[in-house]
Length: 513
Image (cartoon, rainbow, N blue to C red):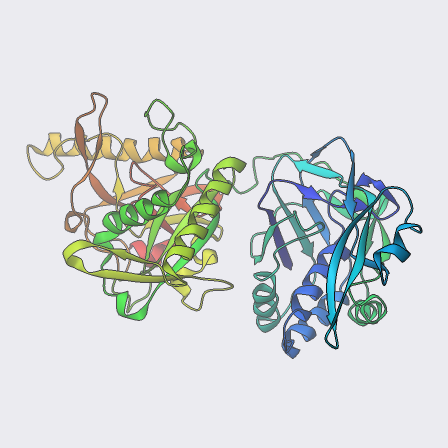
């Protein structure tokens, strides 16, 4: 199965219907997505042959299903825009009498063979309409039943990372291949809606059309009409659960010389990364990015998290931080999403392609934003997001309430403290929308290779109810649910700053026992 995810960075999609320019198009037709991919591939001095082969593979597949939310359509108004410059006369005097009403004119001096003359350049205003759709969720997915090879999948993902718009130039997008497709609600088959799809030979047809219009003349988009039907889905108890911490990642890879920091510095690095992004964000910073309400109190909704990613889970793992993810939850509002992307853009513009963090006496941490699939497995979103019933902490959880002494006092007091710690983990799961785990394992020691002991981490403090800093108890945990959970999952009071990062495991007994 292949799933291409398209994120609308502006929250809107602007495109006219192919049969009525006063009407909008939603969802974006598969042929439009394919055309955007072809344009991106061809817009290089030497188009990659492997990308062409991947596009030719894609055009031969059956039409994809589509997952797209409902959209609100903006009222269509008429705009008058000038067309390209047109030279209508060799002299001003010879052209003035032939211009129709409504033309905009200006005089341009041209020099040819040492002689200068005035030439009248004219533009006429043409009526244009820009139908716009605003979906409830600025994200849609195209799902093909065919399964590509790893090479084709990686090639398509790399190509998609360079696609910047879909439809009108104002419809900025971010595209990628994902491994966990949502349930489609637009399915090919007998239905009332006809969408433009592609078939074998679409790439060659687009090249033939380009030879005709050369990006100057009016153009047409070759397509194959396919009927779609809309399918309503109902949530069932047997479906996999998804915590509110799940979503997309912006991944930063640490440069080789900077991969020396242990996971015990996760909070310090996450705080520095958060500060760098906030420094380049416009005031006021939206709640979904800052994590605070206008009155300064913590936000009650999921917001952007900063997650250093340690090398764990392998027998030779040593717990070093290989990079960091800026986690954007699915439910994040459009204003916060735009504020985050703009801040990162300003940061990169100010520091170059390799932004860096200064960590005081610890030195300088250089990084680079990953475009396309990461080379390092640790930095891959799929490693942390795959379905699993059992999840184990890569960094310890900061318990939201202090359980009491776990290693001192009477046997009865310690037992009660561990029970309170277990309840705190249950509450942490409930806080991110997950059910009560069927089994919980708690430990001060790490529960997977490469993870560092909880006491090795610096004390993590947060403001308490009275405003005074409160030290949170750190513990490693393994949680097993009755049904599968889709990640990424981050638990506890430090989940927005790198603590409580959970890794899914396939065989819990091999990791825990």
